[in-house]
Length: 180
Image 1 (cartoon, one colour):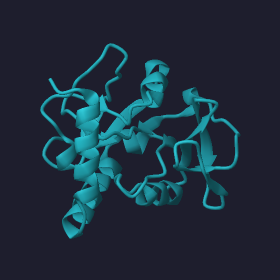
Image 2 (cartoon, rainbow, N blue to C red):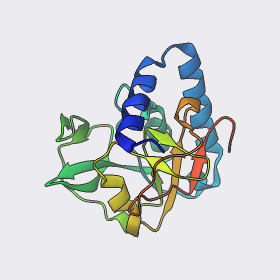
Image 3 (cartoon, rainbow, N blue to C red):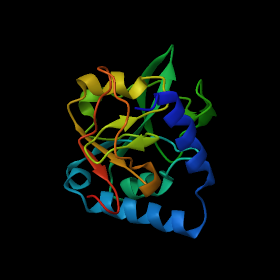
């Protein structure tokens, strides 16, 4: 079994190199699978990241949620803890501790209020295993999270297996073109 750091480096390289119309088309198809899901329809408060260039573009997810009068919350790191804060079209953003855009507001939304968490990651298996970025924020969050969890996995992110440790948390549903 490969070491997590080796897989992370490889996945970052693959994601950074995967661009163009085929990627845009695959991302659009994944978002449509999300929008058609029961989890999306039942959710009023949705947690999602403000994506970086390497990640699946989450802005269309945020825009669709607002159009459907759903509340969007995004992660923010404060003192090595991940909280979720509401994200609105007029939210002021700054670059946070992990070099990711996050709202200036520290108004925390309780995790019990979140219906659906769209969980980011570098790699996934069809059985819900997930390889994150290595800081453990989502694993710690998911331990006590009661809502639905979904990840959108590009084909290059879906692997047969991943190195897993006891603290690693699975995602309930992996959306992928070939495995819904």
